[in-house]
Length: 305
Image (spheres, rainbow, N blue to C red):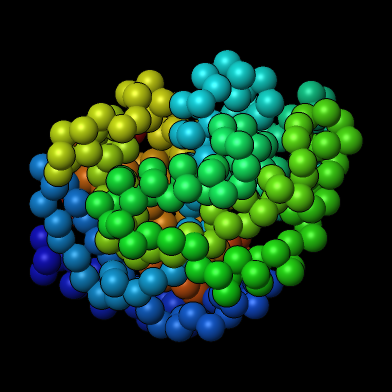
């Protein structure tokens, strides 16, 4: 496995030159476009890795999985999906047109910004600090990494440049879809997007999802099996922005990307996969990371279809 991963990383590293690191959030523009790494955790907890798997980056849209899990856990699936739909969209992840085009006024799915703002608003807690601690505790548990925390520089950068997200939130507030204090909801949303980790952490989280919510290294059940099923289904249909259909055809496993360069993927009852490659394509996905995970899936015949 190590030999295969080394070969695939070196084969695909060159594609980083074809994309660009995210720059609309200034703090993200400091990443090295040539970085590429992969970490794999199997269902027994055995770990394999290659490349820049230990480079730190922020979760960005990958955190949408966490807010969805916690929202369902706190409110039940029925109450969550009254507020956000589960349909794919062919538009960008921060599109306002999506909201205006929706007959119900609900965001199309929890993997676009508007949908994630709603699921974030549904996390139980008395204040932002308590809700953030709940998110961090969850992440520290599923990664077996007690040092997981928010990158303050990225958070402040997100907050300063987050006017599109403010527009989405206030639009939903005006239609009654979003309830609560908008600025507090956005503060939590910006902070969860700014949680810093590595490909290793993503792979461990992916392994928990692959294992139907059971942590492989402790056998603790942390996510209900039904919630895992819902989340993995939405990852397949909506997880890779408006390239989700293409990813399902070419790779065929549940995955979620973020503009920090991360990809988390989960192969049911087999593997959790974490990838880091900060150079992005025009849709916001890691350009070398996509090639790497496609090759890895094809080599081991991992497609669930």
